[in-house]
Image 1: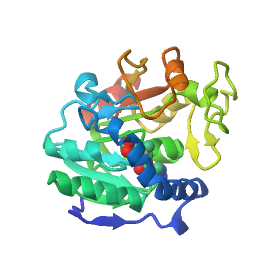
Image 2: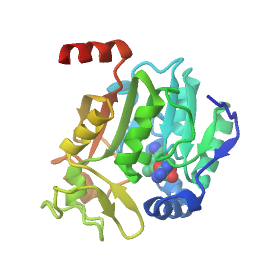
Image 3: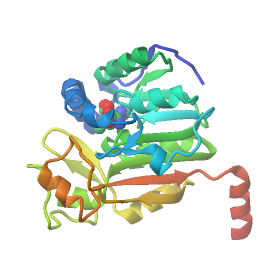
Image 4: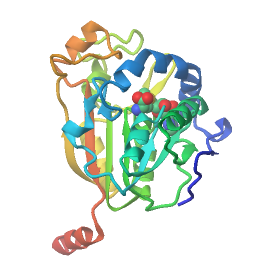
Amino acid sequence: MPRRTGRRSRSARPSTLRSHERTNLALWEQSAAGYESRNAATLSRGTAMGWGMWHRPERELQVLGVTRGKDILELGCGAARWSVELARGGARMVALDFSSARLEQARRQMVASGVDFPLIEASAEAVPLPARSFDIVFCDWGAVTFTDPYRTVPEVARLLRPGGLFAFSNSSPFRSLCQNRQTDRMSHRLLYDYFGLHRIEYPDEVNFQLPYGAWIRLFRDQGLVVEDLLEFPPLRTARTTYLTKTAAEWARHWPMEVIWRVRKPSETRRRGRRATAG
Ligand SMILES: C[S@@+](CC[C@H](N)C(=O)[O-])C[C@H]1O[C@@H](n2cnc3c(N)ncnc32)[C@H](O)[C@@H]1O
């Protein structure tokens, strides 16, 4: 794999992007500084490696498992706090984001922490890296939220080595159906159709979501096996800078976010499954 140490490698130019990527890129380039100043307190509370809006520690959830010595790609890394911490713990990191403003924040975090790994400026829907390069591909509300899963999941399946892990946190389908797309307010009623859930238009960004069954079929079609789907209410003491009090209260009753844990089976396991099926 090319190790472009300390430098940014670029391939996401607006002319090569699809319309939702261009809309989202404009948003992230313009909002990078504000996002950081609003959420830095949540994102670095206690540990750099925390999942979701309440920053639930990875050391408690153990979603990624052993990371030391593994080749890991963060998809939509933002300021790359996770990647920096994983690199400090002995992982061989590559961090990707399509926003140059966000990668500048990542570079600053790297310099401040004294670690060095490649930063790739590209869209997660077309990753300019060779197949079977990674043991783990992951993100915490990263590129998966903003990209078409029918393009991103095949990319991840291509990038993973056999036995590799894909883990990501994202909105739950419940949130996608109960969040008013104009006002952001959470409703106690379903506001949109579940069937056909895919591209979600907000005033200045585009997100993607699928019904649970469609996620599972997409993973299966790409040869990936679901290991876990984590959904939990926030801890009583938890605080977040991402939500209003009312929205945080909503999350005590319905899942606001999910964490998927999906595996590309090892060659031996795949051969075994084919033999059993045949
Ligand atoms: C909510 S932030 C999450 C990043 C990090 N976990 C954090 O909390 O700062 C989402 C990130 O995904 C990136 N992103 C969105 N769409 C992307 C795409 N198509 N390709 C790569 N990165 C993307 C954005 O630039 C942004 O940095």
